[in-house]
Image 1: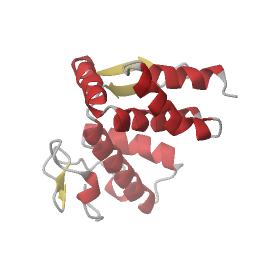
Image 2: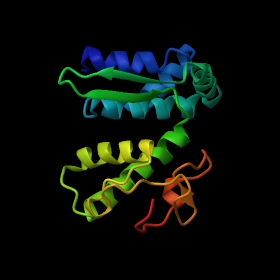
Image 3: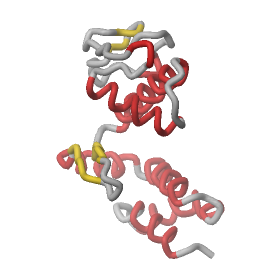
Amino acid sequence: MLRQSKVEIIARATTLLDPEEARAAEAMVLDRAGRLTPGGLRSAIKRAVIEVAPEKAQKRREKGEPDARVQRWMEDSGNAALMGRELPPADVLAADQRITWWAKQLKKAALPGSMDQLRARAFLDIMLGKDSRPAATGRALSPRTTRRGCSISSGPTTSASRCQDDQTL
């Protein structure tokens, strides 16, 4: 038996489908839905919807594109948050990979913190053109600073996964 929250995840993901398509997508995840985390279930049902009705999934994504935005707000702690919404999936994946890559460079340079903290610092470094590595204090990253085929100001066609690991961003 599934918790109500997981039923709602499946229902939201399949609303664009006709009943037969919805049953097919649900059947692809129901056997493991109880064991999946909510995020895992959300991901699994979205993949199932894409497999069952790729044209409808594409249409849903295109419908969300005009809602692309960046939001900022204050956290209860007094810190702040920044988030991009309704962004192209491939660009988000490439950006996430670049953030992780730079966080690993910060870790190699002995910047203290958990990987989550280093990823947050890397995110800000990339957005602000900064270099937080201890040996690089005060050094800014130039938009032309590259790492073999990647530049910090490159467009959506540059994939972070194609970039090689070296000490410049």
